Each structure stands twice: as C-alpha cells, then as structure tokens.
Amino acid sequence: PKYGKRNDDFPLRGIVECAGCNKLMTSCWSGGRHNKYPYYYCANPSCVFRSKIVKRELMHTQFEALLESLTPSPQVLELIKAIMQDAWNTHISERGSLENKWQKELASIGNDIDNYVKDLKKAPDKVKDLLYTEITKLQDRKTEIEAKLYGKPISAISFEHALGEAMHLISNPLHMWQIGDLDRKRLLQKMVFPKRLSYVHKNDFRKPCTALPFRVLEAFSNEKDGLVEVNGIEPMTFCLQSRCSTN
Image 1 (cartoon, helix red, strand yellow):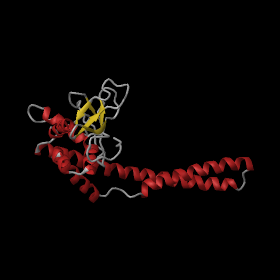
Image 2: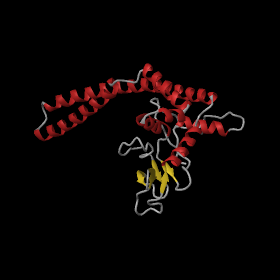
Image 3: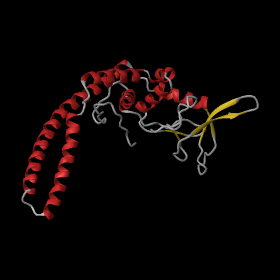
Image 4: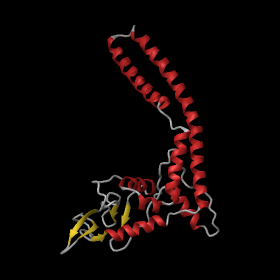
C-alpha cells in the first residue's frame, strides 16, 4: 500500500479504505467544547459513508484484535519457517540455472555483435543503419543480462537475517504493533497485509488479504486435528515478498 502524509496520531491512515467506495479513509482531530477528539472518516463526496466518522480508539482496537487473531502457535511457526527455508533453497537452485542460461546468452550476443561489426565494413550505407540498430539492441540486452548476472545477490547471511526479522514479527504481530514507532508500524502493515484493509462503517474490518505466512496460519488453525497440507498454497519468493489470494 502507498501511504499518505506522515501522521503518528493516525498510523492506519494510508492502509484503510472505505468499504463503501474503496477510497482511502482520511483522519482528523475534531474540536469539541473542551477537548479535541481523533477520528477516521471517508472524505469521498459521492460515497454513502461520506463524512461518517469512526472513533480512532474503536478502529485501533478492532485492528489490534485482527492482529491478535494472527498470532501463531509454536507449531505453526515451525511450519512457516520451513516453508520460507524451502523457498530460499528453491531460489538458490533456480539462480544457478539462470546464471548458466545468461552466460550462454552473453556468449551468443558477443558472437552476433562481432559478426555485425564485420558486416559493417562491406555493407552499403542503407544497410549500415540497420546493422547499427541491431548492434544497439544487442548491447542493451547485454547490459541488462550483466546487471542480473553480476548484480549483488542476496547472500545466505542476508537471508538468515531477513528470516529472523520475519519470524520475530510473525510470532507476535500485535506486540510489534504496540511497541513500534510509525515506521515500524507501517513496515508491519506491509508485511502482514499486502493489500489495503477495507472498513465497514459502524461495523469492523472485512476479512483481509494477508501475506503467505498468515494464510498458512489461517489454514492450519482451521483444521480440527491441528494438521494441514501445504500443497496448493502459493509459494513464497526467496525475498519473503507477499502474495495475495483473489478470493
């Protein structure tokens, strides 16, 4: 999600949308006779919920309840960790295959460029323009491949650090929210909820789209015997990015 103006008083601003119009909700301090009161509200003039206020305390309480529901058991944490580790191992294997493919393509591009340069020496002017165009395309492709091939890869140490950070967050998202500053809160929001949260006025959040580890948790928790097959759950990319179901 993209965030609007930074505001420590309203950390959910920029991630919560109105269920009536799918527009981001905004926030404000409303002045009373003696005090000011914080609210979230929909500012879309064409929405049925326009200007309908939601007390900040209410929305925050409901959001914390949502986070608390995502707290996994130790057994689920081990499952999530195993899935992440398996995704990393798959990435390492696929990376090796890609590097071999890129090396072969670079060699082929080099040969093609050499041949075009030779042809330039004896080609008429009209043909030279075409050859220069082809050489430029090949050089652009070469640069693109070299950036992938020789760019800084994610190391095992970087992965272990990222995995540790992710597991720390996943183990207790509510605690991370309660103790974090605004930057940490927004990082948590991005990791847990890859899409915006939808809020129904005078009700609660709709069932959110959560990141893969929390979908594993949900599937695991829904099993009566405490076991769940992970087949069919979307694979997570090596850099722990989130994917979202369309349901």
